[in-house]
Length: 415
Image (cartoon, rainbow, N blue to C red):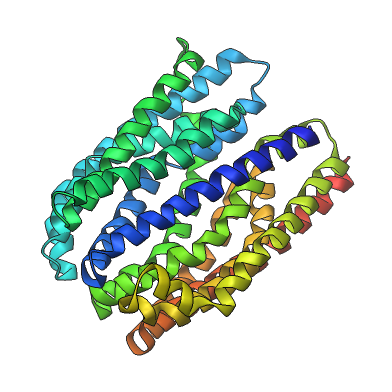
């Protein structure tokens, strides 16, 4: 098992690193729109991200846990999978229609006329994004590593860059950027469907089981999105799309630190669930410790680069127009670096079915983030947004660590 995890981590780390690099190239391409138009697209992506997360209903995490859990019962596996996909399909279509109709109102609130067009283009892809995300989780739960990382990370990033460059060759506009993003999600969903198709079989529906496990995770994911996107939305609403565009260069740059976390935790929940079911407490604790320090150590070089050379990075890749993002980048880098290793405890709680607790932790951090953003952005702009987001990440890290260690100790005592 350890060899599988190590091998998977290595493959995923390479794949995600390449995908994040391509994703960064994608951001560089988008930045050629200029801070104001790039800010419009960033605001649209923030709204799209919130709607998309709700449409998934937290079912992706349920698939990651329950497909390995029902390994010896294929009928239950298929029932859980098909029921989850039907639920996500209904929710995503409903929310896509809502976003389409409410797009003009949102554009009016932000005082950005072209925002309505961008949101309507993105709304078309919501059902595909939702279903595709669940299909990726199936590949991950089945440990089909190559297929998943090739499509979920590399394929998605390559398509975004290629389609954006292709459409920009006709017209350099935010609408073309939106079409490139939407088409990428549609294409990857279709491919993922054909990859997962053999896993389907005729079965009855059981909507109750997926919803009971996943709904707390839906709200948890929603609260995490509040932490991720509140700063962008509030900066755009209070300070304007130009400042939101500059901040949206600093934020994804700092978020490159997520590469190691995503790779290390790729098979964490299925593996941790297996250890808990087999009452292998020592293996479970060892997995947590190894994962924590692997994330910390492997994230350090990139973190130091952001701390010591932020101006050079932004100036080289994005130009002078985005140089005001230097201080927010440094602040956000500190927040991500310190908090990321503690995400191991969040995955540990998910493996133990402590989803209501995960929800509560995310809610506390999200509320703190909203309050801090509201207090700091009017006076301090991007720097205030970065401080608010970093504070929320640290609050979440402390709570995850405390409860994670508590339940690990209880797990040891129960066996």
